Length: 101
Image 1 (cartoon, one colour):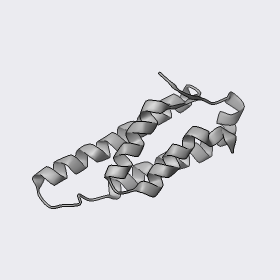
Image 2 (cartoon, rainbow, N blue to C red):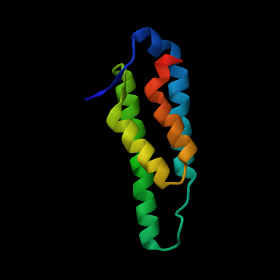
Image 3 (cartoon, one colour):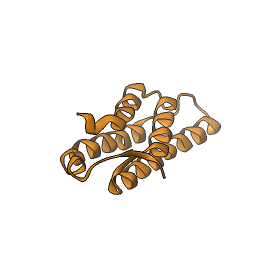
Image 4 (tube, one colour):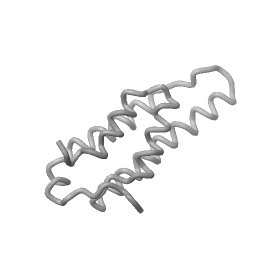
């Protein structure tokens, strides 16, 4: 598992910020709708939302281990862009530098 290490003091200080971003991602991804009608579009949309949620789970697991998980970050941002949520994807990408705040 790789990722940006987060010092315990930074993790305690930034936990609320980190979790707020992840909770926003989860809520907004679940509120999206398929961009086209039809069963195939609905299936791909559901899969993309699932990817975003699984990416969030990876981010939380990594955070609990003291790092920002690279694979979770990539999975989440890719899914958010596919769901046409580029601003939220940028917020997630910025988690990599959260300890620099």
